[in-house]
Each structure stands twice: as C-alpha cells, then as structure tokens.
Image: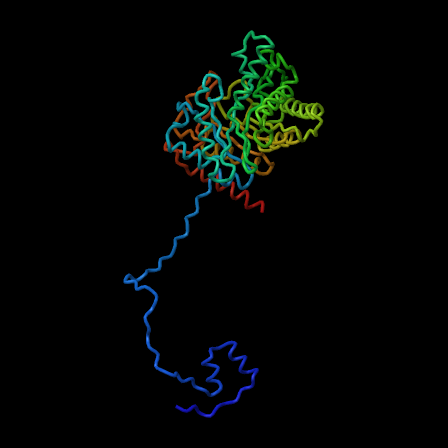
Amino acid sequence: MKNPKTTLLSRRDFLKLTGTASLGLALSACGLTPVPTATPRLTSTLIPTNTNTPTLTSTPSPTPEPPTLRSVGERIGILFGTTFDETGDSNGDWYNPKFQEAVRIHFSIVMPEASFLPPHYGYQKQMNARARKNRTRISDAGQILFIQPGLWSEDRLSLKNSSREQIIDFAEKRVRHLFQFVEKVSTKAKPTYMYLLNEIFWETDYKGGDESDWFNAEENPYFAVWGNRQIIEAYLMYTRIAKEMGLEIGKDYRLVYNDYNTYRPNAKVRKAAYEVDRARTEIAKLQGISPKDVLIDVGMQCRFWYSRRPWFAIPPPTEEQLRQVVRTFKQVADRVHFTEATVIGANSQQQIMDTLRMLNRVAFEEGVASTTYWKAMLPLGVKDPDIKSTGPTAEPLGLFDSQARTTDAYDFVVRDLLEMSAAKK
C-alpha cells in the first residue's frame, strides 16, 4: 500500500517528537504509516508454562510493639528497673515464665533482693544468667544487673566483736565475690551497677523532723575501721580488685553510694553530699586525675511512707524538696539514681499515681539516670511477706496483676512519660 503525501518536519521538531513519543507516533506526525513486512506469528516461548495462576498478596506491615517503661525510658534517658525476690516467696514467682517475660519486656534494670546477701549466694548464677541472656532485647546494651547491698552497715550482724583485720578481710572477700558477676562489656553495652556502700550514715536521735544529728554509729563495722574515710577506702578497694580482674570502672561497672532518708533537704543529705565530694577530691589527688574522673554515683532510696511510717523514716517529699536534693547530689556525684522506690500507706491508688508521676517528672527534668522500683511486680491485693518489726517495706503499686500483665495504672505511667517527652520537644 502506498503512503499518502508526506508532511515535512524540521529536524528539531522530529527529534523533539522522537524524544517523547514512540517511533510510530513520530512517523505518523510526518504523514507516514509503518507497514509490516510480514504477518507476525507467535513463536515458542522460552518461559516455562505455569498452570497455576499466581496470586499477588500484599505483605502485612509488622504491628508495632506497644511502648513500655523499658523502651520509653531508654529513649528519654531514664532506665527503669525493679527488684524481685528470686527465692519465689514474694512479688511473684521468679521461676514462672510469665513473670520472667514481664521483667524482660518492661524493665532495663534487674535488682535481685536476696542473691547477693551471704545466706542466698546460691541464687546468683541463675539471676546473672537471666540478665545476660536478655542483653539484646530493646537496645544493644540489654538489661543491667544491679548488685546490692554491697558493703552494708547491717554487716555488723556478721561482724560483731570482730577485729579490724577480720572486718577488712570480710570486706575484701565480699567485694571479690560480687565482681565475679560483673562481665566485661562491649562499647555499646551498659555497665553493671553496684552499691558501693549502703546506709552508712545514721541518726543519733531522730524525732521525725528534717533536722537531726547524723553520725556513723560505732556499730557500723566500716566506720570502726575506716572512720569518715569510708567512701574513700571502699572506692579504693573496689577499683583495686576490679582492676586485678581486668574490669574498668565506668565501662564495665558503676559504683553507687546508696542511703535512705535522702529525699528531703536535711542534715543527712548535706553530710552525704559533703562526704561524696570529699571522696572524689581526695581520690583524685591520690591517683593524679581530675575529680570528675572519680566515678561515684549517689542512690537516693525513695521509700515513701504516707502512713504506718516507722520511727526512723522521714515523711515523703514535696516535688520541690525532691528537686532540691537531686540538684544537691548532682553537684557532687557523677550520676544520681532513684533506688528502691515504692509507696506505702497511700490513701488511694490516685495518691500512688500522683507520687509516681512526681518521681518521673523530677527524674526527667532534673536528669536522674535511673529509677528502680522496689517490688514493682507485686500484684494488687497481695501483701509483701517481708514485713519487718517496724512495718511493711513495700506495697503494690498497681502496675501489674497476678498474671504479670500490665494494668491501666501502668499504661498511665508510660503515657505520662511520653507526654513529658513530647512537651519538651
């Protein structure tokens, strides 16, 4: 078949058309109709015949995990933890898989209550293995093992009538034993936390106010051998033994001086702050380093009794009082931690929630490094069997039920943290 009369295009127009259209369209624009030289025929294909018609299916998007104290805390810079009674007598059965899973999901820090006391050393390897196993869940660092009580004034019960040499030997053996459970960690991991000294400053005559005389009781065995150099000598002992074992402070472990009645401004807070500051200064001189390189943290025990308060405990703080103490300790310590946090004798669940919110707000706004609850898993309606002669040391916070499932109260705490973080941006 003959083509009709052609239409002449300039070279520029032809190239413009061929750049944006098929060759057939370009030729048509020139008045030309392409003519096939032969009738095309289907040839055998090299593609194998598939008798089953493939069905395209969409890949479902993974359901995001709900926020937890662990995931939110690690994102905003507050590590949340809980103690638990690994003997299985108290706040849920540690050997119950549901309990173990809940601890793994919801907390960055695990603090055994009994394992590191001499009568219960048998539990340590099991607890340490559990913490190590979970090292890659939310972050590269995984869970932190928090060892307590370290060297404790209550060691006097084991050291009654002991000589100076016997007390120092006891301390040396205790510290060496504890460091067996501290692992060297990678650069991305967090170090093990350890109480350096626990409850070493005592009151002479506490009458319920914020002001009283504080001293190191002669019954405190470490005061008996070290006097007011307790923090200095304990730090030097810990770091010497750790170095012998190839462990580095700040990288593999952190040392926390921990004490009670330190959540309201008082004489004990001033005494503790003075001693921590003095220890860092003197140790720096001995080692020829800067005081800021002497890594001593402070742990503020936050056991708040609203009623049934034992004779030795001060009332719960106001938010401003708590802030003042955190600021005082942050001036002298490397980091500050809220430890053993619990609410006892509250008049309602709302009072508990208000208290937890105060702790979280102060921790977030003042830069507290961690908050470890005392028995956070204790279910509602369950009494803590660890009742001292002075009364209970913990009551349910209402965050978990008897099946280790989170409650509305838990969701409120997590949501409140998210709102605090969002408001700061």
